[in-house]
Image 1: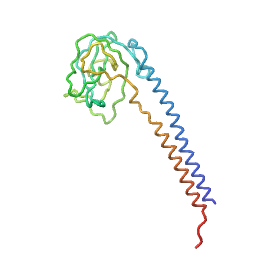
Image 2: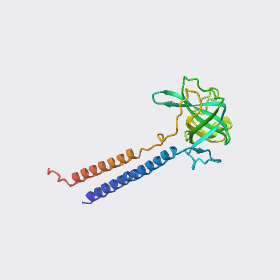
Image 3: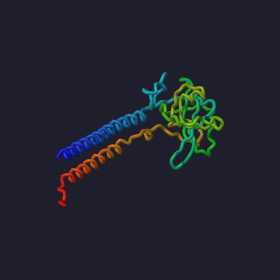
Image 4: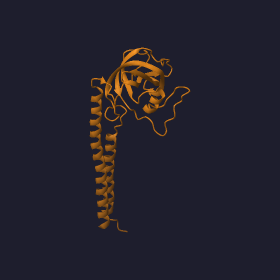
Length: 225
């Protein structure tokens, strides 16, 4: 009797914990979907002038418009695009009334030569961003071959002598025709909470089934010898 009661307690306790974890993931899913919807709405807002002192928390994804002259070297950040393959994001400094800032002009395929810095006045529409693309495994930039492996804004700003501000272009009034803008979007924001919820609910169902199985076997009469 005590063994059966113990199995019931373990079965109900384990199932309750697993169900609670599943419900928590459903709640996290709703929160994440709300956050993504808010960011998408922010990205699509009308562009404004670059704030005097943009803040990475407050102004991330803020749509801005800026006019100035590209200047200095263009840095290449290694990336890969579906259906295109390997290529580079082109990061160039812009001198403007708001100071010198970084512009992510867009993508060129790895074989394209369109990395020269345009010597013209341009207007750029885009979004402020401070990408979190580095970790302890990110290689140091290959300065000899002008290959960077992440958009590390402070490091890029130091290299190009700009403010630590990156504008990811979605439209450039004049640029090399081989450069394709890669606008900011939310596709890289992880949102796996539905899969996690399904996993926890599935484990709860399995736990209940196994508990019922063991309890049934415990209560079944043993054949007489």
